[in-house]
Image (cartoon, rainbow, N blue to C red):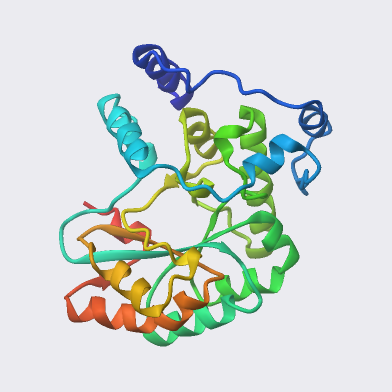
Length: 273
């Protein structure tokens, strides 16, 4: 059975408004009507787009509730929140790049430490800094989709959410020769339509277990403590390409994890049963 059929059944059974059409401005309709696929447009004068572009992280309790409902409907296989708990394995993920001032430094640290990682890249950033995308790819790291405009997908129409993912896939495939297999909605804010948008583009939606809040640059000591306090087998760690505190603490974090017996692996390896 196709995912959209399962989603439709889930929506009915859950009696939820999640799948209801979202309000859309005339400018948004016009943008979609003119095939905003690649390159996508940054609609900076559109109030709805501006609202959707604000950095707001979804409430983790609500994400947990959504995932429990998905599990009950046997749809949780389309979302990766945690890997196998067998062994002391973790995966590192970096959102919001690429950045010319940060990405090369991250790549060097990870490469020197022989640590695999997944970079969830924003489409318009990849378009602006194509050499950074190629640098990450040429060093063997996984490149994934973090939408084109870094907007909250649940605030967009279904077709616009689809376009955000497809536009980024087009850019990343052009630069690397590979279509991303993983996607992450900004802020972790997803509904069933966002989940289907990723699936329609051939991607699994990846969330996380550990979010130390490095995007706020809380200071090295606080970040390092937050990064390590709740780690557990199968964990997916959310960090950001663009945080100076992350650069400053990354090697210490890696060393601390290794001392505790953790091994860093790819998302593919983490998901193995």
